[in-house]
Length: 435
Image (tube, rainbow, N blue to C red):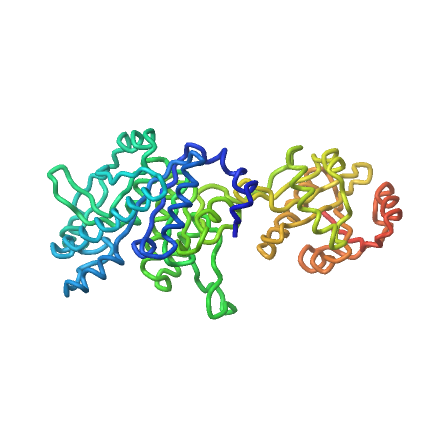
């Protein structure tokens, strides 16, 4: 998890997010959690970095509690089903209480907030023969009002209730409200703060008693996962996954689903590559690209652990910069987390795969295999008929997974053979035909 003292980690992101909008959606249960005050401090930090924040809150937790106190059975808790008149009255009470707690919390952190009527809602109507009564859908978001609030340094707050032009109120689903607000404001992030750690599903029989947390999903992967595993997901989590897909397809670059009860979790999700929950991304979140001179420092940092473990030859920053055109990096959210290089020997039509290393936080995610495949493509494009690599510890991987065969120092181009002899490392030579 990100530590607040790691200012370098935060400052790398600030230029990208300055004056952009984050929509943060809080479940009602998160507002009542002891970490709520810490979340407000985190939001204050975002505001201090000139990040515009809009807050959307749910109230299902409070609706359930009030309904129990009133000894009535709500027709629906979260605004996604039928809302009868009694349930609407309870929902209004619950939403007003949560909105006020947000306003109190913002005041305690020296932030100004305003509960808005920027949502115009219409009845959901009759769906598949069922009259949804006082359940509504968002018809319009008054972005001019919201931009005015942003310019006045005021945090807008959205309750899961909307009104039509006649003054009628309708119960709304807060997950859906968050999407409509994020799309209208062209938000760069939509962050769901819930009581779940993220999306977990069992995708293979080998999964343990608790399925692994899915860290990153493209919008297409998320849609396929929802289609196959909806029944396995708790209702609130399935709702966020479904609405997150809508947001990503509607222009929101990043949708995050995280546990809002984790201390510093919001900052760790926003200001670090790995985050703490599940990320749904609309565009290419992971990519391999050619390195540039500015990547030399990151490449040097990546190779240090390999050098310490005697897996890689030590390289200076100057050496990396002089051969930077041979390097390529694997990025996660625009930050290099892995690298490799292809050195071409045109006279012998041979190329060397070198400096393959992956940040330890991203091991066992298939990144190394992607780099090796990319290197083969690069070597072929250069005209190499053979690709070789030298390894002291990863030779099993290259042979079993990469299709390399054991070679000898005689397979090396003479200039590389000379350096090989001088190094004294006695690395194994591995060779792969590309023709």
